[in-house]
Amino acid sequence: MPLSVQDAGGHQPRARLVLEAALRVGASHAYLFKGPRGSGKRAAARAFAAEILAGASEDPEDVRRRAMLDPSPHPDLVWLTHSGAQHLVEDVRERVIRAAAYRPYEGGKRVFVIEAAEAMRDESQNALLKTLEEPPSFVHLILLTAEPEALLETIASRCQPVEFAPLSIEAVEAALEGDPDEVAAAARLCGGDVELARLLLSAQGREVRDQAMAMNWKALLDAASAAGEEAEEATRAALEAEREAGVKRSAREIGEEAKRAGRRRRTELLDLGLGLAAAWHRDLAVTAAGATEVVHNRDRLAELQAQAAGLDPAAPRAAAELIQDTRRRLDLNVSEELALEALSVRLGRV
Image (cartoon, rainbow, N blue to C red; front, side):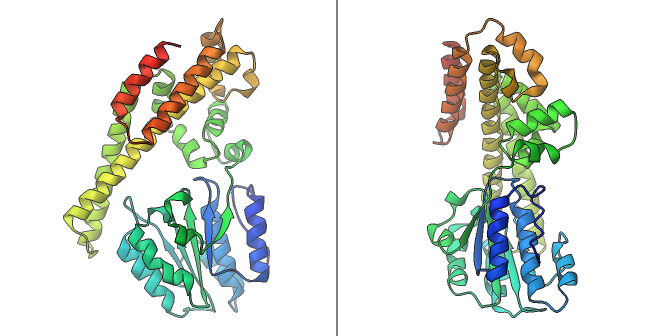
């Protein structure tokens, strides 16, 4: 039966062809689905897993139906997510490595899916190696990642890669709801990431976007810090609840996990703000050059035209390059405050 991948309306033709071919000749023991967030990896993994299980069952339609539910009640589909900044080593060992040794409860196959595989610690990845190298014949593993470079080479090399491209603007727009102009802007600013587009349409996303366009770096940094603190507290609460439920975890481990989650959220929001600021200056340049048809910020066209009146396109282009350079500097763990101060000075010159 053809693969029923619901990847945002079928906008991953290359991935679909690879997976349909795999089902025809027999699925490999391990796959690495890699591509941006919101590009359809999760939906494709669920559909692919459902077809693997259905193909080894006496009642494929029933198996397919149960496997496609989220969460799935099928006992041979194990779906591993994480609540903190990283997957717990114990979860990977118990729910994947040890569980893979048990024969299927139904049919002839078992499928293990690890979301955000880049969030596995090196210890977890090393422990998973043997399962990847010598899996039982009935086991199939599917790893999903938006950051393949964070995985050990020994892990990636043992999986068949399946590439997911960023979604098209049309596909993202079709997945969103709201004011048409704002939806059009979010679809162009998100880089093919539906989840990011939805964030841009939220109250928090609108606030970050306003701060970025105004180049209010202090407000942007404060908002990123507040989001980081919120993520840290939420992660701490989730991990402490798991400890109370019996998961072995020390107070130090909880604190470290929570801080990592907070730092990650702060960095993500700050990077988003800088990216939006660069996109705004790019739009100023193309508006000043009379090319409004390629503007990303479609819902702010009147404001762009007012700011671009009489403007030399070279100036906003130079500003966009300076902002992108600051984003790269932040990847090197430089001081965020000092980097933004330096950016303000450099922007003042152009």
